[in-house]
Image (cartoon, rainbow, N blue to C red):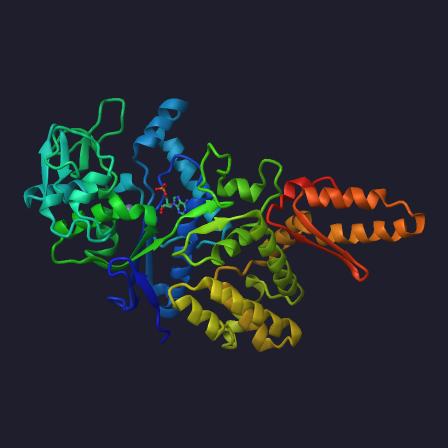
Length: 484
Ligand code: AMP
Ligand code: ZN
């Protein structure tokens, strides 16, 4: 059986993954708060844990893996949006959840097996909080229920901080009713205009952290295998989840392997609305601010080319390069009728649907997806150089393991979209212009096109043998529009 190794944030070591029950491998990943479109950074944990999900399904069998990702549908940001827009909370959360699923499917993410909404588990949260109050880990103060961090000796262990460090470093909400400034809210009172549920502490709503503890317990049990999320969640969210769950269920160990993805930046800078480099997954898919649309497969490829534990930089240049590679691969799939819906069952019947061993080993080695992509280049060379049933099946099955194998229809859409991103048509046009300029001795059109390409950040190399165009570091595809 394939050996899976994962870097466990809990031990800060790369460890061999051994599931509690290979017949039911269980993974929980913190999902989105649903009040707006997912931004491009939000897609990172989705893609990272989708690769892990595919790997686990591959190794243990699809029916032996349970992946849970929640929707946070009770939150003050949602309340604010409802107030600002005059729309109902239900309408906003339903719409945003659907957007989220559409956008994440577009980047090749499989739906998790279970996608609970926090508001469906309020009863379970109340039960858990009651237990924490009874066992002395939580206390009631002014209509709030707070978790007492001093009651849990391992508080801070995951993120490696002491309670004193946290107090010194954090912007802690000052509340006179807290025994320790780091104590966090499990339940808070709701005024009549806010969503609320009846509870032993009056009408109120849960704090954020308790939902993941309650839902993972209900759906996966008191001990499960993997817990994931972005590393911005490690403190306080994951630290608080651990404290709540381990105190509520002291016999269980909660999650055994903790995985955290690093953050995404855009063109070398932290993404922010004020810098004007903030965009959503949907913006990329549909095209925005004069930029051509970026196919979901390209987004996925760019993400996979950086290891999940390293900061990742989203750049147009990378998107362009990914697009060039995927075009070659997808044209080959298309010409050989190798898209998902054409081949999988056929090859499976013949026992040929096997991912390449090196690709599999890369992914199993702490999700070394960039190594897997490097290997895919080699497999592509073999499959396209000397196509045989075996190496074609291997190429498709390997792409599938990474979530990069499109359906027949998706390939058609991809190739169509791609026409707008293709620099080769500019190279052809520049060649033709140069040819006629040699005869007329009028190079003005050649110079004009060359200048426009340079302005768009394209590196132009013209030699006797031909014209070569390549996107440079400042490549801006939107400046190419209307040039042909
Ligand atoms: P949120 O809705 O803000 O709680 O975020 C949902 C998920 O997206 C969490 O797992 C975050 O860690 C992750 N996330 C948010 N911003 C980024 C970013 N810039 N890069 C990578 N992951 C992010
Ligand atoms: Zn969570």
